[in-house]
Image (cartoon, rainbow, N blue to C red; front, side, top):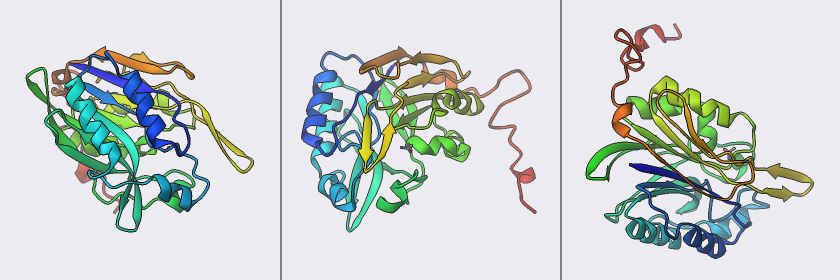
Amino acid sequence: MRASYLQFSPSYLEPDRNRARVAEMIQGVETDLLVLPELFTSGYFFQSQDDLAEVAEPVPEGPTTDALRHWADDLNATVVAGLPEQEADLVYNSAAVASPAGEVAVYRKVHLFYQENDLFATGDLGFPVLEVEADGTSYRLGVMVCFDWYFPEAARTLAVKGADVIAHPSNLVLPHCPDSMPVRARENHVFTITANRTGREQREDEILQFIGQSEICDPDGNILQRAGAEDKGVGTVEVDPAEARDRHINQYNDVLADRRPDMYTLA
Ligand code: ACM
């Protein structure tokens, strides 16, 4: 199957414009799984709760889920994308997953980064692993968002739940993630697709520079493709999710089966 990230620089508080730009960028793309950045509709560095409220929307009833369903149908691909999700009076930093069959799932970011803690509610749905069809075969897709990478438990939970591929919408600002995701991929023997953004946003006198470098890693921790820091576009790689199924690294060691949870107690 073909797996892709889309890297671009979303415009702050301009969801119509951002959806239109993605629609243009995916014209003619051939893929089975497309991952877009975190908060791709809205931008990231919110000036206020009011700004966030202006662009938050319900899932699956909102306009972005409509667009994702439409793109999934058009591309015949599963599409994973980050957006601010309104539910009752709470806003979550979420990722929605739309399948070509019209199904929609949602993940709410568990580990909030920096000032996200003042704006968003923490995720309350756990880490999802979805059964997905591609090329007539099925594979298991896990989802986490950006700063979740800093917590090995996130990718490990997805792998133990059976994920073959982890979709990772991101708005990375710290420099370490592109060199850490190959480790997350290797230690869990999964494929990872990190879709990051580029550009910069300012709040008062503080500037956040987003680092690009979206990347796709294989279960051995090889970087199959990495975008540049400023590139805009779609990167696609052929991957075989079945390679992630056998978690042996030699005839003795299986990286998940060899775990010793009985030894990981704090007592
Ligand atoms: C991040 O979690 N957006 C750094």
